[in-house]
Amino acid sequence: MSRAFERFGKETYLVGDAARQDSDGYFWVIGRIDDVINVSGHRLSTAEVESAIVSHPKVAEAAVIGQSDEDTGQAICAFVTLQGDDDEGSEELEAEIREHVAQRIGKFARPRRIIWAYDLPKTRSGKIMRRLLRDIGDGRELGDVTTLRDPDVVSKLDEIVKERSAEEDG
Image (cartoon, rainbow, N blue to C red; front, top):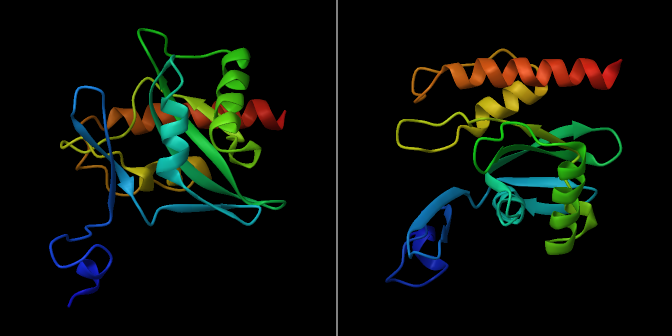
């Protein structure tokens, strides 16, 4: 029997994607179950942290990546899109979201960085391209963006992250 069938039996195939069902009964694929961040020895699913962030009433969408950190191994960086027309949150809202995550998961799961995003880089089918977010977060050259629904999103996010990094450094 294939390993993909072993976890839940012969009738169910494990594809490796995590999903959530909303209040209307729709399923949303939110990421890979093997997408894990290691923060101070705590192995956290990016989908778990994203779900905690999105459960905040002012948040529409979130994508989480791990960034290298000398002290903790990895730090959580969250790209967050807000409800309505608000493109950028405040320092107070950042603190509120961090506390919200701490209450749902634990203090160790609070995002170190929150980047406000008007949109996230998605494929035409709606899958968030975390690979590109990791490249943006780490300041690496972006790879292929031809599969994106809106390629301008990555250049705008890259600009936001560079501005934010300059503010944090100086």
